[in-house]
Length: 284
Length: 333
Image (cartoon, rainbow over all chains, first blue to last red; front, side):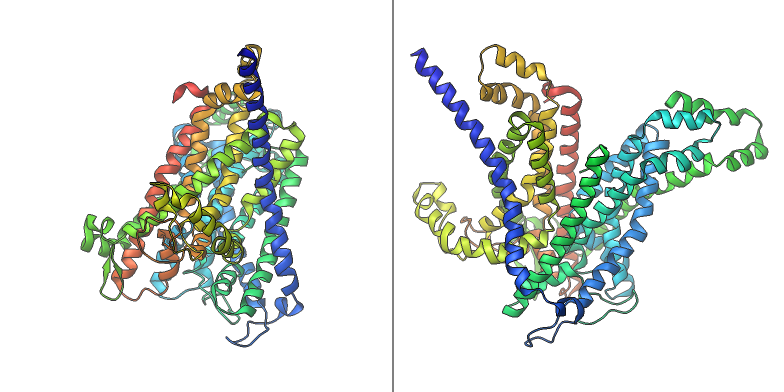
């Protein structure tokens, strides 16, 4: 009887433990499935035209997404210009100046802002930028993405500033440097590698966002000069082309998907490898 | 560090009073820097409050006309300006529940493997790949959903579910034809794949904070590896794991693109999981730019407000739970 019980416990142990292994490997294999499918379908549809031509009118085969690629870059530039400085300075406040209660409130709000669904951020940017002027614009899309960049940058900046050894801080202060001088000339440079990678990760995260662009930057089948007109972007193009009923558009959606995924994954891969090598704290 | 910093920082303040002291402090730069960074930090508070304010004000028309009935009525009729949110709330909840039913066991099992069994190196590289999985844009999941998961549901998984689980009493109601490939279940599968990386990485971190002696004590009493994990380590970490599930739920509720592309976009409340449905995020994505009437737009913004509040509450709870476990172990639940 006892033997049987022991046998049962041992086999339960073996079964459950191997199941956990199966779970871990099946989740990881999804990443390779995704990569494989996109290479398979996207690779065959990718051509030089994709990067250099405008979309063709509905019904005509061929054409490319040059305007969407430029549009996405412009949107990211706006997000970086508006979002990164705010995130950086707020992060410096949390790491270097913040008191107890107020910092807690800011940190908590930042996390909550980070958790707001991207479609709701889209509504917010719509009511801030689109409603007053009554038309969609690159600027509105940039604002939406910037709002998403801020909380990610704040938390990674704070984390990397905190990981600077306090001996550096004390050394600078012992030499008579003011607090601000210490931060600007010693601490920020020491953490700059991490902070910059954190910023790049934040941009990579919003580069793939579609929902907040649907009714801010909207979409455009032509070039969008300046910042005040609707603009195409890669994620929105993928969405519109994937749900359209044309085979040629589906092929282009796969190609655009492959380009977007490669950009996002390579940025992530590079950043995370750089961070791991520095032995710094991993930021989510 | 803080002692050194405060003494040095406060030293110049005692040199004088009034304007001279102010100039001294400004030239020093510390106060300016403090104020500048404080402004930006406070800007985040302002931004978040403005977000709530805009959602509240712009949903005014719809709130005034429908009141609480908005949450109960099933009609969504832009032509006669009659809007009820219940099919969308239903769809949002059902897809999220389906995704959690799949993702929670899978995620926790994988986290156990990574934290308890795998050697540190293998565990780190798998976690690295799982972090990459979390970085895949949601529109890519939607693309794969439309062209891979939907056909698979229509031809293989759907009929299989109808022929097996569909015959059972009670549960059988969830798996009835028609099966078009798009619907709650398909959306749930895609969502599960999207949220599982979050469950794994947060749960793994939480499991790694469980003290070593807890495991050793269980093992030394003769427990098997699995028993020590299941009866000692998991209970210790349960608040944090619950937090990771809340985080995943909040993500699933707010997820837009992937769901919009596979849910079928049909505002109906149906018992069968294989039927097409609609979610809050999906209807906003589909109808926002096409909304003609002010009331229609206002109703969509009110849906946005509902979605915001749901995720806001869940995220708040999740953070508290995770902080609680990481500080003090499982005794706080």
